[in-house]
Length: 137
Image (cartoon, rainbow, N blue to C red; front, side, top):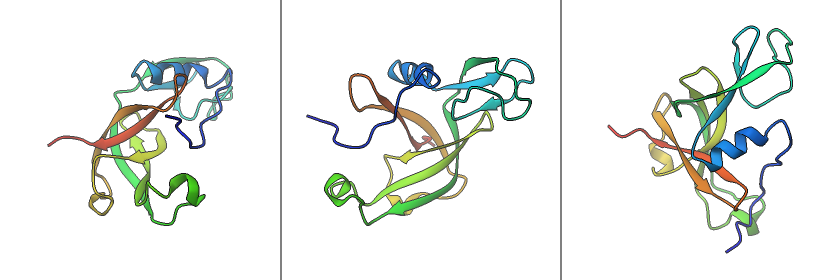
């Protein structure tokens, strides 16, 4: 069965991130000069402008910073069977924020500050998406 939804573009800058997701690991870039951790991947550090970085594994845990509940699918033919769903900004324990979906919970139960952890969903043989679910109590 085809995934049927828009997929991220994999380029040389983001390839290590997507390869790690396929292996079930959430990776972030860290500046080799100043130590600033960042997401999404970029070719230079936004703090010190260094072009040198390393990839570090995230704990894959964080909190819901902000979210919306999508109830009107656009485009309808792609997302009609998905609504309602949650698009959230997750603040990872490492301090970076990442947009993703919250799964495994009713949309009306999502709250600000709710602890979450990463889960991975294979979309295609090449792309595995990092999603988030509530942290078990």
